[in-house]
Image (cartoon, rainbow, N blue to C red; front, side, top):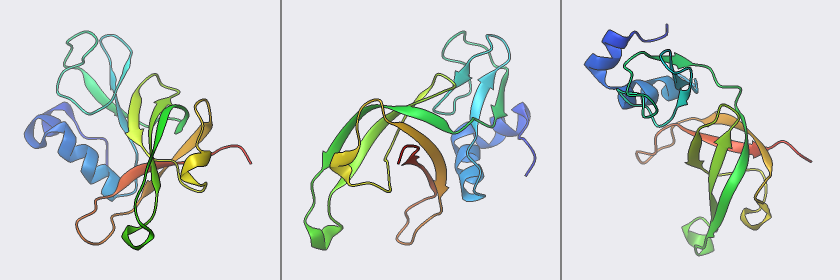
Length: 135
């Protein structure tokens, strides 16, 4: 898929384009040409300057855990998992989870790398999750 144009974004809506990109296995965020800042969650207008010149960009995919919490569930319901706020190196913050370690092992300041988890059954869409960069 080529980078969506501003016109296509206006027709579909940036959130639908973001979901379509994730379904293709591509993690993209927006970048404002007017103020040269990155934007997440996808929008029609830049929240920093109000500009409409938002393009899609490939982030480095690296970031730092800003905050984390463990959600407790019974083992038969899937067990515990973490919910984390991740500060991407591009300066945006997103909510996700860190996988590959026990939920209670996720720490503030931990360096992480993004990957797209494909859509799962039962209506669970493709989503960005993070893996620890450290051993």
